[in-house]
Image (cartoon, rainbow, N blue to C red):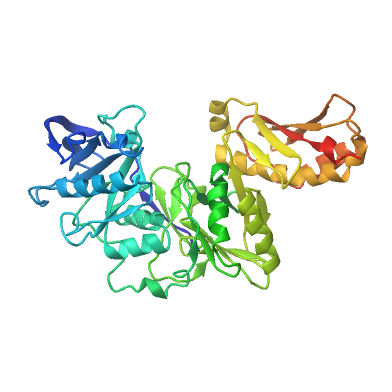
Length: 474
């Protein structure tokens, strides 16, 4: 039962030859054309490819440009008009409503053959290609992912991420192969009945840029949501019964060096040391992503476990009611398991600035004093964020307990220095500048010592601003 890591190629593609075709493929709408790029990629080794990218589609309905990359070996034969019918279908869909990452489109007759009956779309960075695309600077880009009928069911019922990561394993390319290989294996065998999965009937809450990961260093799960998604999540939760199992599909994290792999048909929880992880070659996977977070209410106690390729959070009715209200309001939460085998999970709403709101009233702001390039040199930025977020949760209750000592004080500033010797230096001040009450200073120092000090290669400094406490004083 040792942890299984599969190291995959993750280097940037390199072109051994490249030419931009002089012609374009015309669509029925003269305002939209297809540009063709053809060449051979050295990563994966000597992979002949052909790419098709739209020009002008983003002007329709506030949409994005669309990219399709195809493997173009001698054993690959495509219909003469490929991929014009596919892009005509995409164009018709975009005219009706914009496409978003994670959307599906059924393709009449299939893509290149009937085996791939639909396509999905994911946000994509052109930098992964290793060459320039003829795109306007402001254009967003969606990558076309042809999928089999079984893969579409798996993605719709659970998460598109689990299908992409399974292809990363099957085609040995992390985080996922961006090219279409019509001869590739399906992520799901035809004989697998996905309706039998315990999560098949879970209610879905979908929002862009949801991420979940497990941190091997502090043995902690983090479920990260953008604050802007709060209203969307709240509206969806209102339509879901209180006793329903709720699943949040998550995307692939750019910062994660690995991801938990879906073993088709496993249908059960596993332990951290037994989960199978696909990882980028040459990188230590201290953070591994998951494909979803699922919440299961009406349990006897709180417990979080690794389940298939995601995380299952089992909660009592009271805990689920509190967390559900927090998810609707965009409030951070920390869920601790009541069992020895259970894991802990942080639910964190992130904003453009590192501001972490408490449940009501006072707020917390984080200011990193160490330059970003030094932070990246001295530690993993995600690990640092996970560490100081815990501190953010620990200190406000201590301040509230001593709020009667804070006459005319609105803000408490805690400057934190983490040293390579794994020592912690705290400097505490107030705004307005007054003497910090000794009991409060000691309480903050004591609670901070309960956290294991993050390992760093050089000194890292940041400030925590706990603001708005004057409104709690009477």
